[in-house]
Length: 118
Length: 109
Image (cartoon, rainbow over the protein chains, first blue to last red):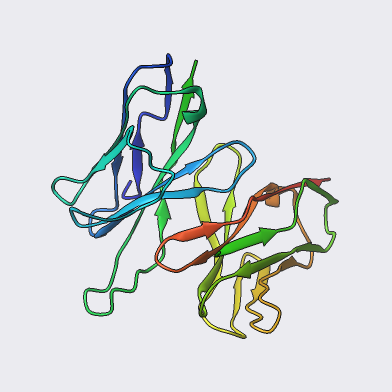
């Protein structure tokens, strides 16, 4: 399967614990995005990378959240000191951006990681 | 600010009924517009898109036309099937995607 993969698919944790999620994009894609989706809402943008550079972060991304893409391939999203309000589906997407124009093609989404904070 | 306003659900229709899900957007410039679909237990999938005014996106019998004058991108299908039951999201893209809240569609036989 050459689509976007995410691990784990489900995570249950206690309030105050740290969690880390992984996203493996489609291999030739240079852009990687993280979104958060809460129940009954559409996905909300968190951050995105072009290769290993983090180009934009939403104000939703508090200082407890950190994302990395160290080698420009897979990415991790870490949440420190989790709170119940962090419970959501965390979605990863990837796309191929034109190196000259900077315009990005279609974003392909992974299945998501569902986080439940007790 | 930039946003997408989407018809609230849930929407329940009988098989073979006509479907319209309304979507309007507020954005600077002329963004690309999308409809994504999320089937039960699956990830988001692109259903159709339009990149400029008057473009019509179509896929699987669904259509949506990019209307600049009304800043709308309503989703339509002439005859829905049970397999169309899913949550539908309207979105526009600058660099990132901005989604509507989603409309849950249930088709009953």
